[in-house]
Image 1 (cartoon, helix red, strand yellow):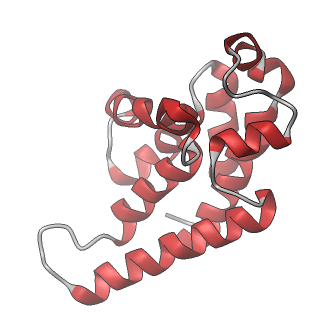
Image 2 (cartoon, one colour; image 1 turned 90 degrees about the vertical axis):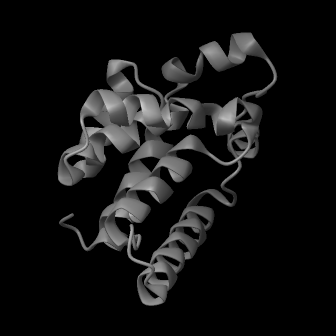
Image 3 (cartoon, one colour; image 1 turned 60 degrees about the horizontal axis):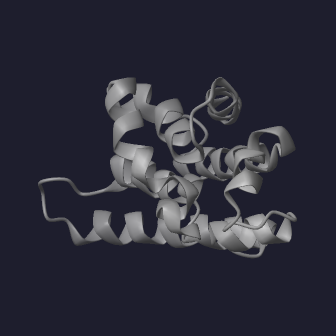
Length: 145
């Protein structure tokens, strides 16, 4: 399952956003290195504590699967946006927010304290976040990408 692949990427040292996009990259013939580079800037809520990087990377995956691409297709675009709305809804149901800073604060981490941020891996807070984002994403994609 892709959820375990995403968590394994996180355990290898990749960020939340890199882990999600790299886990799904093979389904879209996206080279892992490119996937990691594309997602690098999303981690830590765009390094600002904004939208969670795992959620942001998941929106990219939804766009890869359901986005209209070069053909302007209002149906495909609407379906893509509906899937993204559902992603946010389900994630918020589990974590009450999609805001990285708020998720960290709820978990007892000060997102403005660099020393506490360095300890995120030991506290395994992001493991659950990445896992939940991937589980939701698998469901929205129809289990099999």
